[in-house]
Image 1 (cartoon, rainbow, N blue to C red):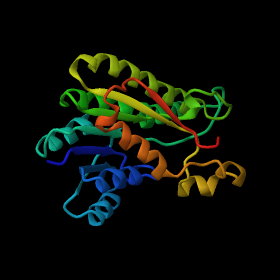
Image 2 (spheres, rainbow, N blue to C red):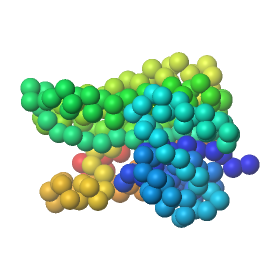
Image 3 (tube, one colour):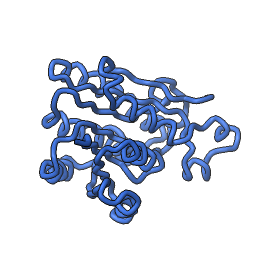
Length: 227
């Protein structure tokens, strides 16, 4: 029987590539995002393979409601939390909204999703979170984003330790620049030349969600490409 994978943040530049990777290898996929139209497109691309749902993944109550619906479809073996986004700014220039938005979108979404998944998953399963090189290599101009993504790595490490005895693995991938439409519009060509294709990152995530990496947990895997 095919494994069940839940992909959260499934309609983003990276999220769609993750859905592609899991669906292509034969998993049943539940694709979750805020956009109903985006989820519907994924369902149309993989009829009978991908089912969709919508939720505000920054909201604990919405995430809890989502997982009650997922419960009716089965217990997922793989969960990928790919919800996130970027807003620039320095610490001294940040507004309360900047801070809250980045924390909720990048760390809160991973926290509530991991919390719900950890209560349900069984031995042999795995969770993958998405962090960022900004979490490990501080640079001016991405303060709240960097701190939130650093929190994702620590969440991954803590949850991996908590679930070790249960046989559930938790890892993170750490991209630098991803070759997405949004980045192509906003970043200079010099940086885009170093960007990694979403499919390449999705392949690493799919590998972490496989029996081949059954001994790997609590890791933060860099996928920097040529950065």
